[in-house]
Amino acid sequence: MMRPRTLEAFQELVRQALFEIDELRAAVEYELEEEGMPAELDLLDPIRAELQSLLGRLESGGYAFGGEPLAYMGLIQRLDTPSLPIRPLLVRINDTHCHGLETGADPFENLYGEG
Image 1: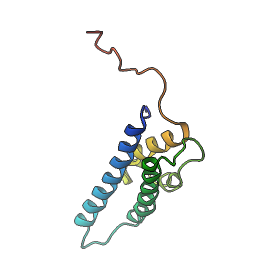
Image 2: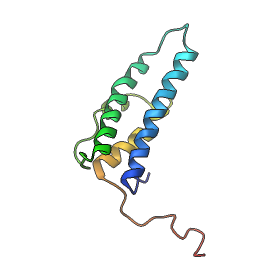
Image 3: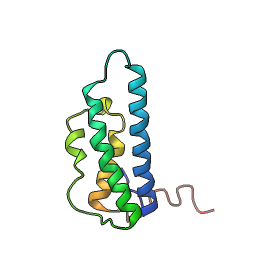
Image 4: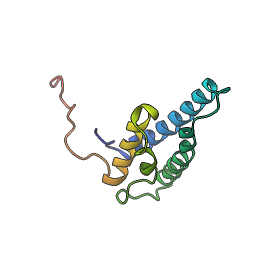
């Protein structure tokens, strides 16, 4: 799974995760209105808060790549992917946070030849 190549692409990835969390919550709340909310839904609040904080630091320029995994990783590692469909996106954000932007050769460059 490739990491974003630019800061703007990383910001957009975080925005996409925030959007997906909001959409997931709305869908689950609509579908399960009468049955009650599953406990897994409570995990979305701290994940969303951490992503919002990350996005704020990215936008303000007060962010440095590297360091410990994001705190939400401990939460999502307890769930399997079907329980949290945005898990791959969250893992990709964490990987970028820990290892920085992708700097290697673009595997898609010249995919169809030069032209």
